Length: 433
Ligand code: AMP
Ligand code: GLY
Image (cartoon, rainbow, N blue to C red):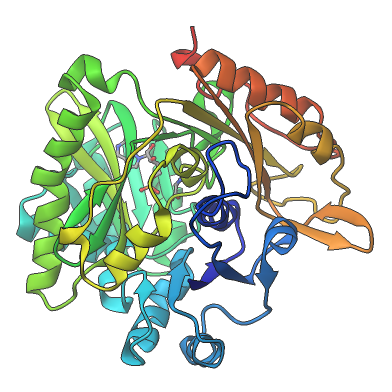
């Protein structure tokens, strides 16, 4: 298949790696009956450029993307990040009958507008935290005092991971509300306590098929200290789900029944079918499963641990979603191997990442068994690989158990050089023996 993947992060690199792997044997050898896909990534990064063709185009411009897809006989477009979704790139492609994995602008508001997401959840009776939308500081102050500490204050629109503050300090909550009120409305939400789960659901607008659950580490520092980030690491699967729900499958079935299907049905009823990846960000509270947020795309860095474990072909699944035939598709299957990813970030991330520094030792890191590297903010300048942004690489360790997978990921990280580079040391520590 000729596939265009939009985006330039580690998520997109992981998607491309999974698509390329379909053409290989289980041991990674090239011999197989499946012909390899022709993949183009736009705009991509140094890792993507190493593996597939890349093209520099504005991925948020629907006309540009559609023109490229038509001229290059693209059979499937996979939209990685939220920006092109919210900009309506999928709508433009669909208007030209190009199969696209990713919701249209209106359904993508499930991620782009927390108010919209809350309304849909309300209508579909999906369990989520109580929230009050406020348009000025006086209202926000009342809501903050009503809910009490710990305070949860969220920007309504897209905020690149910076919109949410969870704090015990009333002053900090008010300050966050004040700042984001300048950019639109703000949600004050009930604090939810419990383990977090990211569950990815493939949707064709009516049917949903689940991928394996993962957990993301959102805070910058060990022990979940420091500011929220785009995500500093992840692991999959979640062995502790079985303790509480009997099995991972029982947990997933409950989420599909009480959260994913009601949401997808509500969106379809409203004339905004959700075709793409429904990312359910969940908290397992004492009272039950609650949605903290929906995203309209694969999560980063969770994708880097979920897709390496996928044993059925990704392209078939994404195409079935894009063409509305998911009900005839078998559920995706996963290896019993586990995966851990640790994100290497630049000095100064998330506030003001230092860029342009050399990255070394990747070949040595890749020599560690079970290790793969998904590139995020990387570029090649002459012969040097350099970091170009905050989250630079996702180093992934796979193994028979978490002790092995972690050891591999951290051994690989130790071999990579980046001046001032930072990463957490405790990713998946609690599930390793
Ligand atoms: P979000 O950007 O909505 O995923 O929020 C970022 C992080 O903030 C989540 O992963 C949670 O750790 C935390 N968070 C968001 N909403 C709540 C809530 N209502 N209660 C507790 N923690 C929350
Ligand atoms: N890992 C969080 C996100 O992708 O939004």
